[in-house]
Image 1: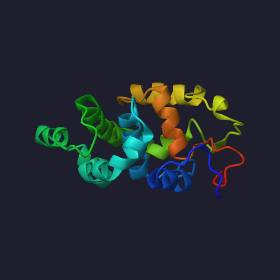
Image 2: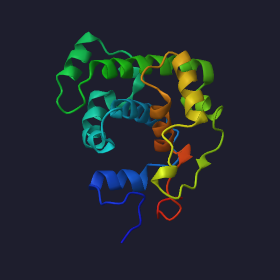
Image 3: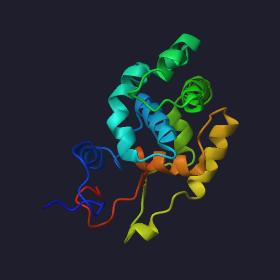
Length: 183
């Protein structure tokens, strides 16, 4: 039996995400945008809910091409609000479009989203939590990055969302040491 970080057996999508993505460094610009959007939509919901809607999000958000998303119109927003395959929250949808605009400006300023992030975390942080009580919901890095992103015009990027984002993209690895997918 495989040893994973979570105590009960979740569904296949959750297992695949845990095993193949979570905590694994991926600084591809489209992936960073995808994870930022998904983490912001997850706020207040379970990650499993978001994973099960991920393919619909991918389709609706132009395969995570933020240059295309930045050009979304009110008609596009109306279509998104009518799509039961995603989380239909107008503030979060507007934030995803806003963040595509902000990301384009950020790239002009820093060259890439990863360059921006690496000024805060130049190398992945590998934590060694012993149990769930040692897993923070935020840290100093996520607080600083959230504040900087807000200053750059991003929305729905509080320190808790950003901490989860940093875990998702592998700048923070919070797998338990005994987890088979730690490294």
